[in-house]
Amino acid sequence: MARSFCFNVLCLRIKPSGESNREAWFLSAEEGIIKATIFGGPKSRLRSAAPFCQGKLWIYRDPVRDSSKVTDFDVQSWRPGLREQYDRTMAANCISETVLATHAGGGSWDAALKLAGSALDCLENADEKYCQRILHHFFWNWTGFLGVKPDLCCCACEASGDTVLWFNPKEGNLFCGECRSGSDNDITVGPGARRWLLAVENLDPENALRYSLDNVSFLQVKAFVLSILAGSLGKRLSLWDY
Image (cartoon, rainbow, N blue to C red; front, side):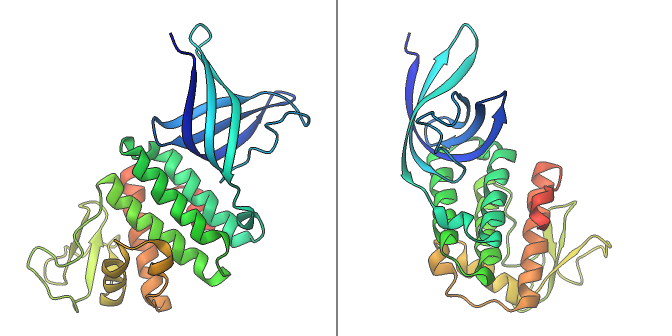
């Protein structure tokens, strides 16, 4: 029975384990989330493995101990720029932890890897003012990947595109003023926010940045998208509010 495997991965998280080892979590195109131990201290040839790196990973699996260890990691994309600025680092951490919390979407892992990788590529050299926009563009696409993205075009009564709608987190749908129940938890989603979300949902992050977004509309986008993700997870990740 084979014990050694090779995967195309994105490193999501690394934490110390014991005196000199580390536990690592990867998003793989072949198996989704993989957890494995990186053995060795400062002299290990695997010491350079770090979050946000992407490349080919070799794993040895011990069926008796039910454990996995990293035997090699050919890093093809380091993304050092993500560690050079606070907003880039925090946005990248939000992407990694969201992927982990949602178990990489539960399928279509190759698509999940491409989606997360393209967002991190765009973040690597992004100006501070664009980091949040790139992040929430990823979040919006991720809601579609999870299958929880609501219809933005209209509410049940087919309200026009210029109508202010409200998102009801409990029902997971948008409603116009006449159809909404008036809950205090409803989130306002104005026409500017909806137009931006519709315009960028099928674009890569670089092209999405070409579409302008005023601050009020962005705040609506943020509240709306995070509410969808929180409803899907059953909780709100603290990192989202950095």
